[in-house]
Image (tube, rainbow over all chains, first blue to last red; front, side, top):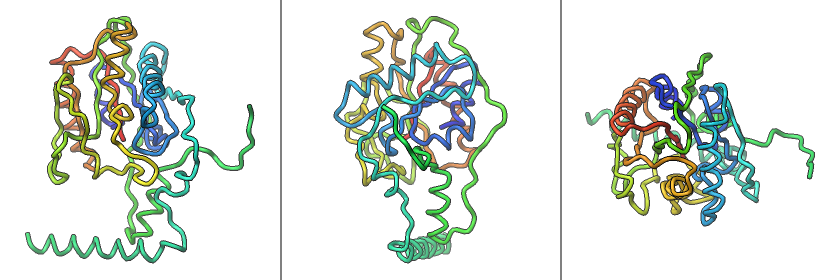
Length: 118
Length: 160
């Protein structure tokens, strides 16, 4: 999505990315980025909280007026509540290492089989 | 209120995904895009006159994960739910049943009604992820063409 933002800006159309993967967006480099420190999936606010959602969208559109230089990141002033998701997402530890290796082998075998059929 | 911390708070998804896929036996990590130069376009009219469009990574209901072309869809005819199953959002921590959390067309319309922006663009746009950067460039050109057709002044890009 950062590449889409960059292309639109090059065509003269200003953009704001609302996202929750700060490093991916900032490493790519975009003009305006509203960072929402939530689990991936709800960058515009928590489910069932329309006032928060609207505040986040308003913060984003106002960046069109307030950002004066590229690589402007603003962090939305909201917290998810629990922090468990930070460790749980894409977790790799001794409890699941063997299972992840098995899933990888299984997927590669399927891909090899699919290729041999074409 | 101040707090004391020993670790950076926000996650690095570049680091997390590299470790995660290495654990699956993939030797070569995904190579993310990184640029030294960043383009910057300014809004050429007051915000309260601007027509704003949304670009999402979600797709219309019934989409096949094997066929996900870039698309444009009427804002007035937006579905009540979107297809997100094949995207890498956090399926343990949350859900995508509330469109306001990732495709906030209703909230954008409320901002137009309140006079914060001028209007919502007649179409919203969807772009697939997990593509090559070359493919994304082609999709970006299509979205730019649609934005010009709809006389869009600014775009919110909202990846899940």
